Amino acid sequence: MSSLNLFGNPLRRWFGGSQRETVPVKELRERDRRRMLKHFLALEKPDRLLRFGSQLPDEQVTKYVNGIDFGRDLVFGVYNRVFKLVAVGHLAFAPKEPSKSGVTDKERVAEFGVSVLKTARGLGIGSKLFERANIACRNNDVDTLYMHCLSSNQTMMHIAKKAGMEIHRDYGEADAYLKLPPADPASVLQEAMQEQLATIDYALKANVRAAAKLLDKLPGHKPDN
Ligand SMILES: CC(C)(COP(=O)(O)OP(=O)(O)OC[C@H]1O[C@@H](n2cnc3c(N)ncnc32)[C@H](O)[C@@H]1OP(=O)(O)O)[C@@H](O)C(=O)NCCC(=O)NCCS
Image (tube, rainbow, N blue to C red; front, side):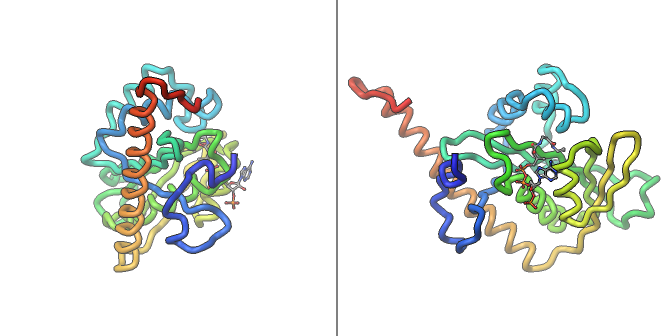
């Protein structure tokens, strides 16, 4: 499947012509929770291990998704052209631990976890979600972003290194952290623009999906698939 088919992104040309298609990263809310659960349950066993650091059973994954606090954390997602949630990034904010007081002067730190469905990998989605998490940290007065993953996770290590993260490996696991500059007008504008465009993209895809469902119910209409 080509990247164009994957997103069917009507906003593509607004951004100019890079090799990779623009990835519309949308902030997810309560209404997306059901689709988030579907996304996590669709991850294959090895990917679930990489994402959560252990082989979480379905009930634990459900508990995790139901426990996400949209008032405290930020969750980002990418929908494909048929309104399937193909990627989720969870940026969890937490008070700075006293042991980490030398790392940052800020009151909070953030930790990022990300997953992209197999069918949507290699298109820059994971990197884009990570980049959005960076900007969101800056705009929320957080200058330290952590990521915890298995050190065998070559792809995530690559993304982390590319972003300039400092990586500490320990017994098969890796803790990576990134120091971020403070917010500036460009970072605020960048996040607002990305969110607005992703919101239009989201509405278009949701409406097309709703219309297709209605069409399928019409007498005599043969669904495409
Ligand atoms: C890690 C993950 C999120 C990456 O998503 P993705 O959308 O495929 O990532 P991207 O397309 O943005 O980038 C992949 C990069 O890794 C590189 N890469 C892919 N496989 C690689 C490997 N085996 N070794 C090193 N680099 C690799 C790609 O070349 C690409 O690099 P580039 O942007 O410099 O060309 C996805 O593989 C995933 O969901 N894995 C399972 C869950 C997980 O591991 N989560 C991370 C822990 S929180």
